[in-house]
Image (cartoon, rainbow over all chains, first blue to last red; front, side):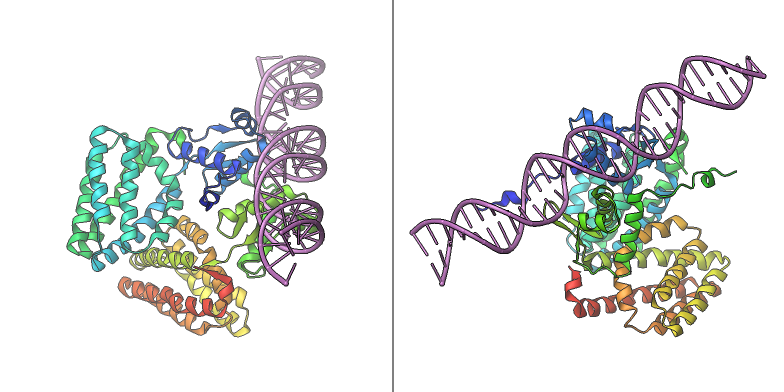
Length: 224
Length: 224
DNA sequence: TATGCCATACTTCCATACAAGTAAAGTCCG
DNA sequence: CGGACTTTACTTGTATGGAAGTATGGCATA
């Protein structure tokens, strides 16, 4: 019997703890600034402190947690600086990717499919799935440009941004996001690189107005 | 009194081990693919395995080491995919930054100063310092654009690229790099955004020719 | 009441021991 | 001689105890 199950070996406990906490932080289940106790989490899931500690180290490396020696570990607040930086990088990179796609004119059914998912989840009020589809829409563009690795790099930078979006998407008008996606996709399908670049830059600059509003509404969740 | 001066505590042991290994990997002192033993390093520096292990976790998170459970930890090979991805991102971001600088026309003496350092270290054959100055040149542009955080993000992505550059700079013509820097800086000083963007894109595309040559010369140091 | 000291109860950090898994050498058997 | 099995020496992963540092509340004192 071929052991394909070898590849499906369960990740280490520390890795599982990390992934579990990662999702809870990104989705906002764990509030920025909240305390993370090694012993408390270890007891909760019936493990020793060591794997939990190693999960904390991973999270700190991703900028999602802050370990204060001999004082405690806390969920990192959302860094406004990091969000703005990631936004600027996304705008620069994705506008280049859009030009590539518009010029090469590859198959774009994956992006089209996500548009429909967004319509549906918006009406249903499924915020989490709407955001996931939004991400896949942008990812599909990177894939269409033949640059999957670039999207992986962007995802690492995006983590702080995603936390904010999970907050803002509950408040802001999602139909506006859909309309912007439509404009981008139409330009890509038409092979109009200039229009596509303009549209995606405008789309990503949307965050410049959302961020201050969210920071004002939840000042204790943000840090400069 | 600013409190960060009070809090100037020595970094944790694990952090020091991480930094030590990080530098050795980037500078190429530790060959890609080489084995990293927890116990061996721990005994060498007279510590237990635990802090060394935590340093490995950090390195793995940065893509510089690969931990194979129950099998061993190895210096990560230079990922061609990661280098190409980081290069594309740099080109996109830095061309935007260049436009900002050309339009805003801030003080650029920091960039000018690095040009002189590069002249000197090139003639002296000080490769490590030449690369450091090259980095500071680009960093100075990010600072001139008012985006220090963006450069910090780029630096994280650049790590794989830097390893390659420490290899290639010993071989390739550094005077060419200097000439390209000169062209970029002149365009920025003249406030010519279009020329600056064209120049920096050409500069960063240089790597597209260097990378395959380095990969061909040291195939065992690279992975796709 | 206000202030400085101190015991105490936390926290993360490091050391050590053991468990679980891998790989390769050695060994037995056909 | 060749192949499968077993032993053995590794590796990383986890558990636990204690060391070092920090914050807090109680308490004596002016």
